[in-house]
Length: 224
Ligand code: AMP
Image 1 (tube, rainbow, N blue to C red):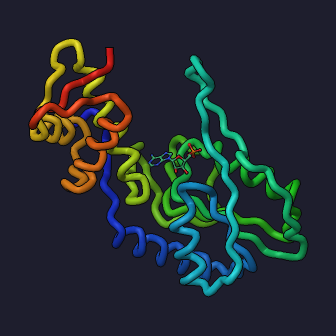
Image 2 (cartoon, helix red, strand yellow):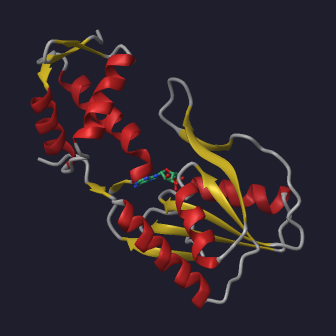
């Protein structure tokens, strides 16, 4: 049974979606002088948008969600609030997806007040319309039902976290797992397979982090 609806996004899809997004921006007549990638998710789409729209200027701003220690509530913050003068320039802020929209709202407000561009528009590959607090000026795909998009640039990080979550949940009833058992449980929980190279890398990472121990062909959960 799939517990978290997840879609594995391929590099080819990223190119196709970014090309479609660039076409939308062009058709609507917006000509950015500078692209601003929202770090980290917007990096690859922003670089591709620069290529498709032939934009030379690309900078980045790290706006991200963080979890306060021992609190469930999350809030977005600008990690490195540096200053740059964008006066006279039309800027395009690019991210991978607008989910809650908090990251982009924060980035947009920060750029508008601190960097002073002549114009500032938002573009995202995907927009989860039922939950997002903002609608981007340009998007390629409207997502009507929430789903986790497993983008190629977070494959190692996501796989590591997903495996850790599965094993933590089951640690009271099962502490020793074979590679194939973890793989089957992963596929049942998330409905995707990321490929053996990523799967092995994520398991090695969990061993390095001291969460798993490898004994012969078996992975043993070390967490108490
Ligand atoms: P948000 O502030 O909720 O709009 O999202 C912040 C960032 O988290 C996005 O730019 C993505 O990098 C990541 N993210 C949020 N929701 C998803 C999702 N459903 N699938 C993949 N990545 C997501």
